Image: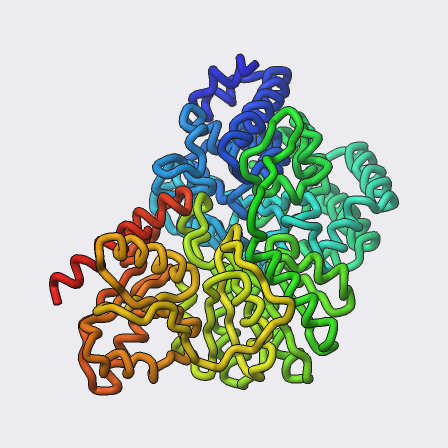
Length: 630
């Protein structure tokens, strides 16, 4: 039943509800979320935890005149529902539907787009400064609120934002939605500090005693009030050593129950009247109100379709995932090499390193949402003789580009980057597609870049990477692998050597990574029409097999080359082939298949491959057109 929810067309409707109606609305929203996401997939557990928090914000503040910035964006489903997107919520993360994250092009209520983490304080501070520079006095009264959750405070940019905000002293509200988790449990000293705040009985008891004392003091002058406030601050500082937020210029309020609507509304109403930077520490439960998500929040952090009644997902048959193959290979390699260590940035489950952590807990490190630190930490380990493997989603590795360049490549350190979710990842959309890594890695001096055609080759590439003694990136796609039979042992591959799969035809298709299978299928379709084409599994984007390229140019049967990559065309694998031909002073017609100068929208991977012209039938048609042109 969604009787109240059905009446909510926008934020103004939320402000009309009484306390009982708001509580009922919270229950209806949770029911709506579970039933809808069970059909579309999505980030369920984070948004279940922020229902009351979101309702309280919309009850107290006036959006979109006030600005609300989410961090990370997958907490914001209730926000989307309350801002005119309930009727289209069934299109969540579908091609042409509403996005899974705040998107400035989707709604005026989405003040800032966010798919990655730890950006909200910096963005919100920019908005607060812009507000204060306005000449219109009415605009100066607007509020800017940043909501941090799911481990966003473990990221370095959050601390940079806090530091700057505390120094500037602008009117800014930061809400720390502390559920103790990112995907898995939060890690690090800040997480332990927040936990101590939540559970320290002596602090909470003393705080209540001081609050009762303050209420009994007549406010008969600013001096008495200031003295009382100083007492309260002194108690907090004494009982919570450091009080880091207040020390850097924030007024700290909390921790408070993030599921108590009346309390949240009362606190936000008071905070609305305050000046300067304020941090409200809210304690919530990830997956709140849906037992399967409460018991397994990491499973329901980002989930596909599931049975809403039981929480069970359909069983997946067939080949293992590339992630699990990587995980098993690394564990196997670590058995005989004690120098191998593994690092991830708040993604032990997503990257497959959770199993490695269980097998070798002393050699596994989750550094939180801190990719830059992860890479330089790995560089330090490598400089001291270890063999670090940094497992990141391709899209998150972008955040550590400078560290990869200066701290790893410049120093020629043996750090292996295992880049999961490379290529088009589907419904998470443009913030999560891993389609830039060939371009931003291959131009780095000393970097080796590999991509496997199947799971057996991924295992071999991991062995190869750990034996090279320099910076290496191995990138592989999301989801199920090809399903090939895997040899019992891993073999090191010859550096920079491609694999010729078909050696007859006037066109040679040079494919890398996930596109090798597409090339093979396209070749089969062309063969049905009597057209023979060559297929080469290039394996290495860098170093490129230039000897093979030149041999193809010299082959009188070959009239043209086709490059295939699940990456941006600009600066990617196809560009590398063109550069190699140019450097050798030879000419050969080349047709490149890849992703053009655009951010690719959300949708299933199959839909997006078709959108980018990368399906086997499209490739076959493109090859025929290319053949006619040459």
